Every structure is written in structure tokens, then in C-alpha cells.
Image (cartoon, rainbow, N blue to C red; front, side, top):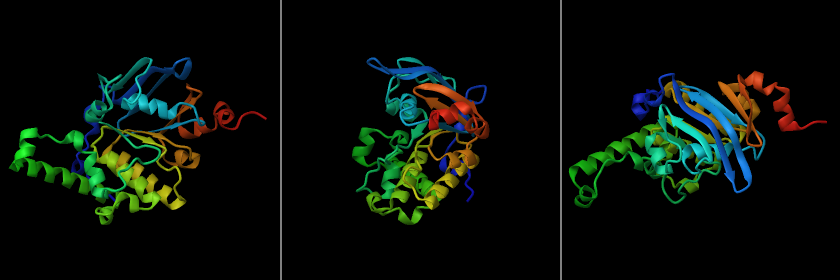
Length: 272
């Protein structure tokens, strides 16, 4: 499968800083009352890079994605999209600026068709007015058609065009995960955040998802931060790994180097 990035409309390089960094997290901390969830986390992802974010359960991985996407406001530190400071912006504003994500449990609209789930992700890209909507002006019809074509292109990209009119809730669990991934792509992100997209999938579905992640990275030059617990999958396709452990950074580097680190092994397996 080969896809021209201009077909889907992704232009991730436009949001990169002058040094090629698409997104950077600078000394981000997060606390709830007296509980410190993140403690001075710093990391970055470059255009076209697949960064795997790993760590034991409770390490703070999803909390970090929530800080990036605006669901949580960091207690300290900065989040930058290219050269722009997006720290503490509302989630809808963060999405408009180009950060899209998946969630651990899909979070689809089960009664809506697959194509309508993707169209929902394009809401931030729609350029209309209330008056134009009420009058059903010609520009509205053209705008709707443009967004539907974009959504159709993404469905072709992930191989679900035959399921376009099927209710999302009627699909298999694996297909629902792919729809969640496709919906994130349909938002035309400059940075993609994936929160355990392979959790609960069969081996075949995981391989299919890994292929789509690689295609998104290579064909679309899309920078991706990817939370994952399948270490074999991480070792096979990640460009770089960042490890969190109890809210602090433990390691960052090439997959084999990080996974062979005694500190990382200890964090996952403990000591004898």
C-alpha cells in the first residue's frame, strides 16, 4: 500500500521547529494534591519519527499524553508544537493546531457508521458559518463533499472502505481499533499520539496495525508518540524508546540499547 500524503492532506513538516523537532515536552510535572504523577519529564519527537513510550503500569504514560493533548494542565514545564507553546490550551484548540490521538478503549460512536465516525474527527477543519448552515448555501455542500472525500481517502488508507456504512459497534474489536486509528488520521494531524492501540488485539490484528503505523510514519512523514506494552512490536518498528518509571524518565535511546538496559529490565521485572 502506498499513499501520497497530499491525498489525505497531512503536512506534518509545517509544524516542525527550526531544528526539525515536531513536538517537545520540557520538564513537565503533574501533581494531583500530594501525589506526583510526572516529575520533570523531557522528551521530543522529530518529523517522521516513531517514538515508543514504555514503562510499567502506573508509570505516567497516559498522563503525559493527556498533558500534551490538553486534557490535563501540567503543574510545571512546557509543551511545544514546533516553535509554538501549547501548554495548558483547551483540548479542542490543541486538536485544531494539529495534535490527534487514539484512546485505550477506542471511544468510538458505536451507533454511527464508520464514515460518520471519521467525519466527526474533521469537525475542527470545517470552515462554515451559522448563517451558511441555516441557508444550506452552495459553499456548505462543497465543504461537506470535501471533508467526505478526505474521510474516504483515509478509509482506503487503512483498508476499511468496504465497511464505510457499517455501524462502528457492529465491527470486530480489531476493526474498531483500526477505525479509532483512522479517525485520528482523519483529523489531519501534524503529530499523532497513540495510547496502547494494540491492547487486546490478536496477533494478526497487531501485525496489521503495526503495518499501518509504519506506513503513516514513512509515507506521511508523521511524527508519532506511541504507548505500547508489546516489547517485541516496539523492538521491531520503533525508531527510539523513552522509558517512564513512577513518573520519572528512566531511559531514552535506540530500541535494543534501551531494552537491554539493566535499569529498564529491573523496572519491568523487579529484582530477585
